[in-house]
Length: 198
Image (tube, rainbow, N blue to C red; front, top):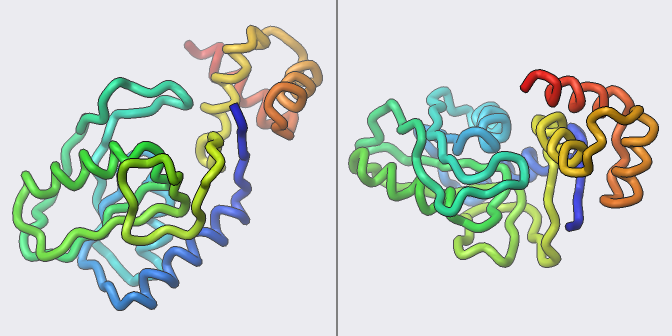
């Protein structure tokens, strides 16, 4: 499996470009709805750029690190009225498209929004759903680790490799060799620390 570890700088570049594309389109949402958990940080940044004060979220359960559940489902529903509002649904990436589909169905069950549009920083062409706005198109499948998910994703790779009791240097070498990931000692130590919590 191919991996990409995104930096905070890389994230900001994509989030800013996404905001500019939405602004250029003329769409002015009344409410931003994040698909939690991955869409929460991008949604907050988009609120800043789009000058939107109303931000809510719907928790869709589909992925934990790289492990996918068979079907995307709403775990925690939206706790707000959507009637007569222009909604922007935000996720970090459009992978299978299932989370977007589940979120849109949920919003329509909650009420009667004026309009619902969707966005993600990255869109994989294998997805069955295409967001209204995205910045990068991923044509060759890879797993993207965003800066807010480094500990979780690295922890899973370390655990899958049976490396949780190895030295940070050995773990770093294994991650580099097997996945092409350049992880810092701090990132590795943090990831191993969470493995010992469970």
